[in-house]
Image 1 (cartoon, rainbow, N blue to C red):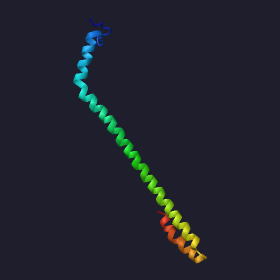
Image 2 (image 1 turned 60 degrees about the vertical axis):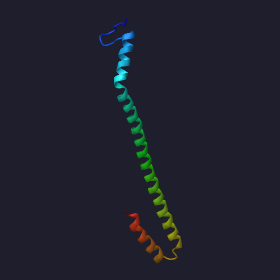
Image 3 (image 1 turned 90 degrees about the vertical axis):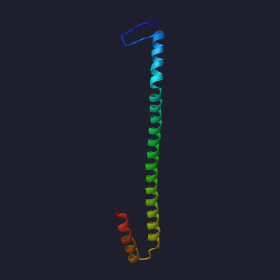
Image 4 (image 1 turned 135 degrees about the vertical axis):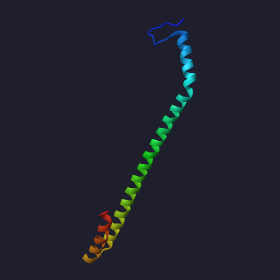
Length: 95
């Protein structure tokens, strides 16, 4: 025979039976909730990876642009050539 600690608390065999009944009635919901948690974590990780990859691509593009600018500056032989290079790239860098 189960002991009643409070009106809402049942222990012993009656408690085991009630808990088993609860699990049988809610098993699909509990399973679905756990699957949703897993999917939420996977989607969250996917979004984080996508944002990180976009950031990496942007930094690579900036490095490439700076490298090409540096190479062009190194080819300038006079002030006129340098000013044309810097004028051309000032439009690119101002974006």
